Length: 328
Image (cartoon, rainbow, N blue to C red):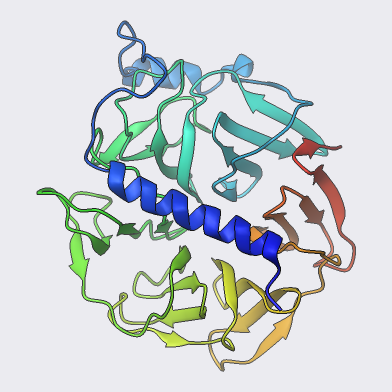
């Protein structure tokens, strides 16, 4: 039976998505006054800052409101939180000292990351930030599209192809509601007429090299498209889908029925197998990632802010976040 606690977490996320849709298109400033004196960093400044060791500092605090995890550049494991990025590297935690934005729709890629969300106290970005990209671990951000117009909670970007898919909950004259894709790094977006998805979409992922392959997790299951999002087919039993993640050959997804599961689905033949994960009580996988350079190195974060990390393909998991508190 679906747990009340996990149900509340998913309902909370659904509420956030709905609220986000209502706010899209509103370019007014939020509770925090944004700095009027800062401006976008120049290319020369960006080059200088790429080697700025002061950008990251040791971190021993708590992490909450995470909206994505991933390996940036294939080696830096990052968690995107409401107050900037947190990094787990060589068993140590670090946090960013600037650009501490409220990151949502976060997607790590081979040369950086794409994100949406809202600006932090130290940012000169407009609110919302639209779609931004960084190639220096978040020290600087460059506009991709919709700056000052939209905040996308549900967004997928291919790790190598950088194909962008966004689910827009509330449209305006710039972008209608629904699923849209860009195959030219945000220069243009095309509306996708979707069929086959059942239930509220909770997560979206894009294949790393095939721009036409994507998947969504909904409260009715996991759905896969191989034609650019026009048609989807269910690849799981009817269950509460919680997360989706692509490698080159597989789709790994989180789900919750009577208990939490992490399943690896083979794209070529449709076979699937369960990935061993720690026992959960009233919890499930909210975000999952693996190191593209070393698939045995994996990490996931649960709805209750428990983070687990493995370097041996899931045979042994180490808790690195305990109810939001980071651990070494």
